[in-house]
Figure 1 (cartoon, protein in one colour):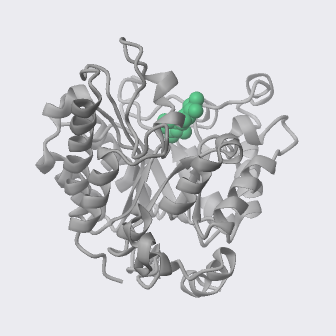
Figure 2: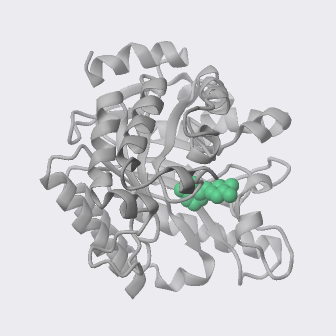
Length: 385
Ligand code: XIL
């Protein structure tokens, strides 16, 4: 079964609704997109959801979610099911969760999320196979240059096979650019780079494709948005890496832009610079996914209304620039409600106030960010099939 056939059959069966179909003719024959006739896009009240407004333009909207809050918080779960057409597991498919020991796999949390997504007619993303973080405690004393490639290969083979047919896309390699690493190629000196050498990147994509030929294979990374020396170096390193991988026939099919933004750097966002980068990527035949969008609001005033407006303006600016490129097919935020944003722990404000970064507030009410995302979808050109 090729990817196009798969789209029309298995995914409709998985989701119980015809929300997944292939659109476009990307590098390797198209990618998943929403069904324009998706009932949620056209029926009454649901027409105002972010999911429906995205679907109306051939886009997918979704978010990162975790089993804990989706189980314990019914209001959050209901909002997530209503607003999202695609879900990324925040931790459940990382090594730290999946690999309790060198020889075992704990699929239960990931399976719960995958089934929860499917039962709510949502697509499911794989995140992530080759990453420098979320490393199990046993790793350092067990994995060495002699066995590292075997460890990575069998992990990818086992995990991709387990979810084959149920995954929209895999973040095969995550955060591999680190222009401060001292390496001339700007690659991160992750444990995989140290243990295997830079070929682990190409290998990971090939192993993922062998185990799940239907998933869209994504290279996911952060820090490409600003017109400054750091972002510029990262853009150049990423373009060089993509060119090298594609030149060698490696099945990288999309670039994932995490899009973790900083309110304090807004003046350094220049749409033309960002759009030039996106065009360079799409000219390579790659799709583009915005995978983890949020905004750190340190430095913004505490006042809720003005803070929300400034954060929403950042979403508008970046999404408007991004969605002008038809290769951008997915927009996901890293969490749907501020209540569960990782930034509450990772980017705390000096005034101790809650970070207000995501579409919904703690009470699951839409904020200015929600409207900004919806309006960016409404204004976006329709993706052609
Ligand atoms: C984050 C999670 O949200 C946190 O809960 C965890 O403590 C650290 O990792 N880029 C990524 C994600 O690709 O996997 C990260 O997720 C956020 C940054």
